[in-house]
Figure 1: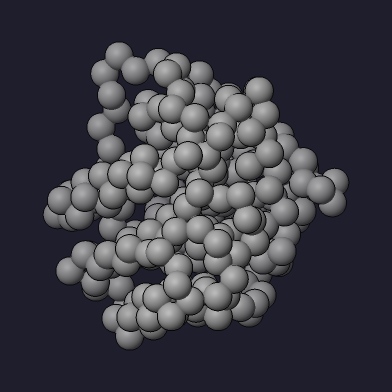
Figure 2: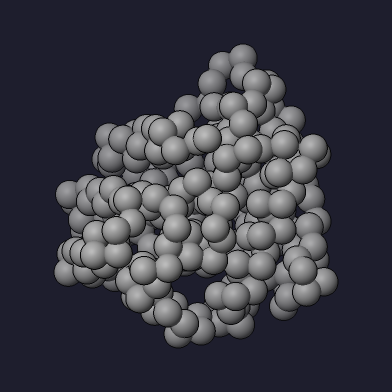
Length: 255
């Protein structure tokens, strides 16, 4: 399990920052319509980022995260994985997401990310010239994988993603697809995450290095899975550092 429904990003809003935001319905190349949320910066940097949620899909945590990126000049689109099976309506905390997760396919997620990237490149999305992904847990693994699916990414960020095969469709995971990755990788991991042991994190870093993929793999000692949450005040330093690294990664690799 990843974030609880009432989780929120541990990021202080920037006072006075102006952001334009709205709910969207985007369409993948197979005709699937899916829910998304866009936040546009008043003073855009030219960078855009696609946010891949955890197993719950799109809910307020990720909408707020999109706003925080936009305050930093990075246009952001957070999207929902479940357009093919659960429609585009907003959902409450009682949504039974596991049956939907198990029906996802890596290729379909990549197609939906493609639609989000194309939106960010459009005038409506801000005419972004540098494109990134960021994801959490299930979305973290899939964020890294976008570096293999899409050759126009400038970088991919993942928080506590599993390095191995997907638990949804058992498709090849980041370790197995490292040789196909065409963009730098940032991995932000919890040192006290029983679901992702240190050996798995080391294997991810080794696979990226062996493949010649530029990478930064950071493990926060004592931090649990889903540490990037306002509720985890005891891990505020780790969250602050992770957010700083995200912004620096985008700024470093933006074209």
